[in-house]
Amino acid sequence: MKNVILSTLLALTTLGVSVSAHEYKVGSLTIDHPYARSTPPSSPVGGGFMTITNNGTEADRLIAGTSTFADTVEIHEMIMVDGVMKMNQIEDGLEIPAGKTVELKPGSYHIMFIGLQEQLKPDERRKGLVKFEKAGDIEIEFLVKDIAKMMDHSAMTDMKHGEETMDHSAADENKHDHKEMDHSEMGEMKHDDMKHEHGAAKDAN
Image 1 (cartoon, rainbow, N blue to C red):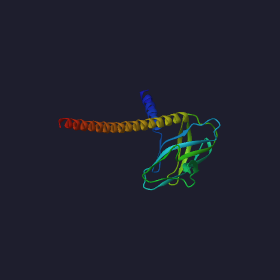
Image 2 (image 1 turned 120 degrees about the horizontal axis):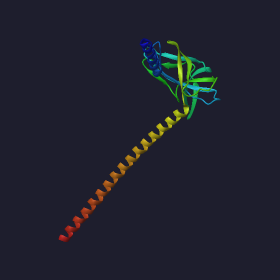
Image 3 (image 1 turned 90 degrees about the vertical axis):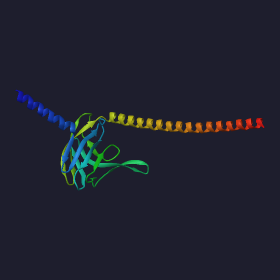
């Protein structure tokens, strides 16, 4: 009985490490934390993200993908064209340089799920496959994150950064004003002292 309990606990512990790590390896590549953003019920498209590290000595390319919940999977990037943000498909694949890490993230490189067959809901795990030019194919799971919470976190980060910038600017202005006041006061005091000394000398004569 003790052996059964021990085996069960060991299995659960091993499973927990695997799930919490959310990491996959294929060839010399490591795929870390693949996730997708939740979508509205009628949305035809979705986005997938991950971090890919190339531990090898040769570059590789992310060239394709498939999923169980979308008709088509493409690799896209967001680029600025004439002051307007546009999304383009990377038809020849995304290069993963040797010894480097490439992050697929919102507003940059990402996987595009086109023709969603159903809504992607927060905390779900959705199966997919990514294909690399040299390392080959690997099946992964995308953890679906709540897009509303992601946006709130991003907004909070921007607000915090803005507050820090304002505080820094205010401190600089106060410091500048303080220097100007000190300089002005010292100039006035020095001028008054000179007048006083000049007046005293005149009276003595």
